Image (cartoon, rainbow, N blue to C red; front, side):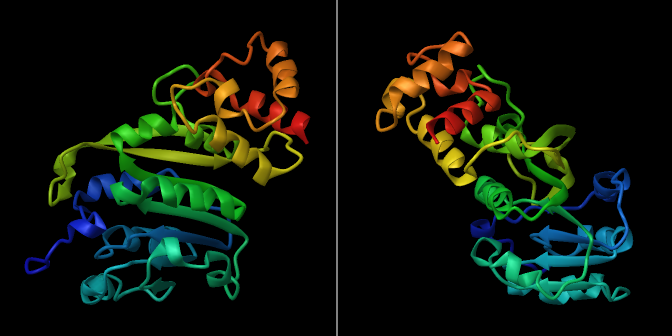
Length: 262
């Protein structure tokens, strides 16, 4: 891709270290009749490994200029489909309608600037995904895996912990990319798990989002439009009160508040 013009608006930093690419996929347990979604195929360096590992690859790529190199790298494979479009604008459920699979995975080297919207979209789709494994900016990975009480803990952390068992895998040096980004990356895995019970998931997500609306404000201020008496009673069970900030609360507490309000 010597003549390829990398585009900042697409966050293009192609992973060029084959050892890292192999490490991303080598330890994944793949169950029969598998389909993997790749978001941001680039020139297909990771896509090739996915075609080897999974029964079918559904790829999304926004940049039409990589098409020639991508298809060239996939010349020996026929178990894939590439959709040249913006993943965030796609009806993914509709894209999967005519696909036959029993086990769904998502593997991606995500553009830094749209990492959180992509993860939020995957989470809210309720697609019963076995495993999401993504490469993200190291700082973003710290937010995804943050613990209550830490500065990186936020609404996306709660969403993820409600839906998945979240694990850090390994750090990837900025030197493994071309062009080289200004920061290191990290591989994060989200494993399917049994969710905590909530009566209304969309209400739960809204409650969490509202709780973190203003980072430095208390639950009393952020949730003033909710029934504060009910919220106070729930918080008291966990030795908190309405002066607590959302960043102090575990996902199970948010679930309890949501259920009590419903």
